[in-house]
Length: 604
Image (cartoon, rainbow, N blue to C red; front, side):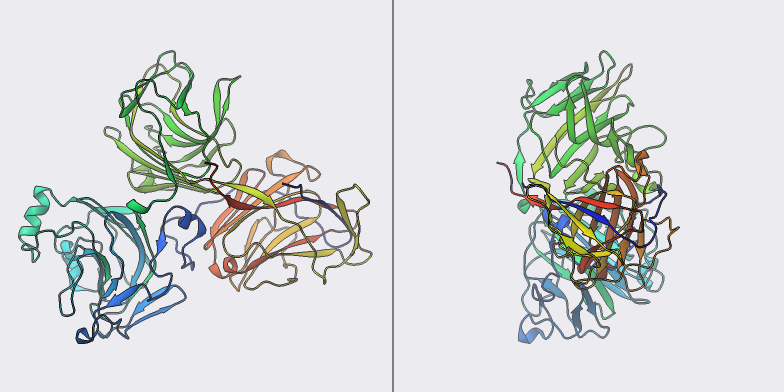
């Protein structure tokens, strides 16, 4: 790819911001944003938005004599599906059938309201009752069903009571999730698994036998519709996303698990063995050791079960680099941590920056790891997104693009003794992302004049005798995007979001002594102003700024340090951006490269 031309700016304006901001916290499950649609990262991971076309993907039960029309009580606007009270909607039935899948959705009810989400509902004729396993949607405090555990919010209605859940109250969006695989069914509420049931177990058969579903033979099995229930009360749904097991993206990468562990290489003195289904790592000499893939991966989905025979620290490396001279690995590691701090599922940067996303602020994630049993790890690396789940519980959730590809590795940590086992390793190759350059052109309203570069010199200069403010509309940064800017100098840079693409936007009114890297505006847009001094660099050194904007979330990373990671109003993310530059007398600002992260075609 051709290199981006260098831009050097020298003019007059205001002083640069200085200082550094280190503290940030990642968005939590309890925080909600105004982002309603599926993000690019979710789509790559295999999720589909069942509300992408509003009501077009659904049929109804309203006026049964007239067929399967969607009733007038249902309406869809700006990503939110609303059912008015009064029973004029009828149940809403997906046109598509689903077998093994994950379904996640956000729901909100009015005071005292009742509704539900049913899955694996068999096809029904007009006039038939719509029956299937139901995720209860309810105002626990305001509805009588909330006083009975088996009919409270997130219950498997009438059959299984939810365990360990918070009260579900009216007025706020809650996060629901249903996992259906074979005879296994799970319900989740706000990141907590509250129902975990085998439909073929004696416990379920007993519960079913004493319920109104007793005579239904294949209740909850096979394929069926997803149904949003009309119970006569007002309810809202948004971000109704589904991921089907038989339509997962990418290709499965076959990693040999035979005795020779073909496709893997050892690094360190630990003993790794395979028997066709289980890989065992055993401490021998006590060095830090890894079993790594010979192949490199960029975007991936990795599932593996882990069991510690002796409590020992370990980890799963992704996008990592093999250092043959030092016999070590560097790169991202999803932690396996049986210590009292319990950071299993956190994100550590091996031999580079240390902890990127520990779990010190996430009590639910810290409690997910089972010290005595097998633990299911689910890891997704897609573009800048690095995510992990432990036994289904969300853990690390970080945006960072320092490394976009590398090997996968299983770690045996240094120490005197210990053994760790991995089984059911499944690795899906989703291709990769890479940085591609953007060519900047200032808007016509920018101050200063353009000096054409001399022949053979890849540099363009702006000079101004009065104002020193330039605006570069970023037409490519609409919706979800990751942007990288390399620059040097002591002038001021700002990246502004906008609800609409504009040739120029007013420079943000930000206090010169501000210590914030991400400013939220009253209209829901945002402005990034990178601060100087991160990573021990001076203003004249080259700085690397990453801005990641997906859905309602914006992360700011400067020189590998996350300055901000927040949920913002989605209006700014759906518009466009402009890069603003300003310098004062005696200052300079040189933009050396601007790149956008782009998904590439698979190399195979």
